[in-house]
Length: 243
Image 1 (cartoon, rainbow, N blue to C red):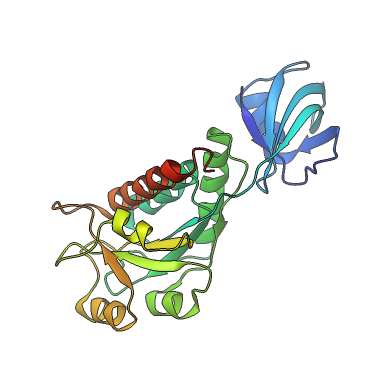
Image 2: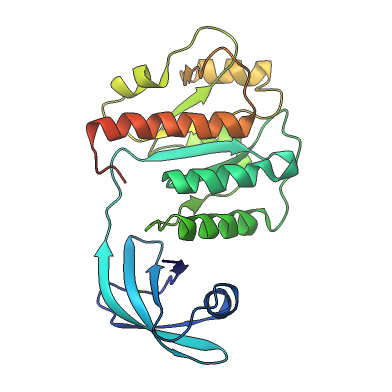
């Protein structure tokens, strides 16, 4: 059953009017019609099952049969990732939204290849919405402003920052989770070519825990997907309903 985005939906709604982009997707992309069943997500914790009641040129109505309220599980996962060439950073947003990441922090590092543009965050948001709908996710992740690595570390309050490094001896994610006291974690991924020497020293001086993903050099998007997958697996061992 296809899922669509209804950001204005509330838990006491029994009828939703949909227009704009989602109207186009429902009617012209998926070719749904009156009496078809669909799922709606407001990106804020609500998932609804409904039936299309009417279809007009610019809007349609959906009668809501059931609304489920989902809760964000603790600890939460965030990811800080560098802007990458060839849209590989969009892949990070897409796949990690499917895995349940709740916050994304795009960063610019010493070796970052691509520079941010005026619509960088807007593009990431569109990718996140599409991924949220693809996996019937009740939560649309927050895409934070593009910032420097140092600014990210200085202002981070809600997450324990941990950084993936390829060189040297580092902890595994399982070891970090065991020592985290169930606090939310922000995984920091380096750019093409890895973090620069000064950045590694900065992370060490700030006592940012570093971790390893094995003895192979991974692309940034592979490292991001692998690390989040490992974290989700660890959290599921402690909570089979982790969401």
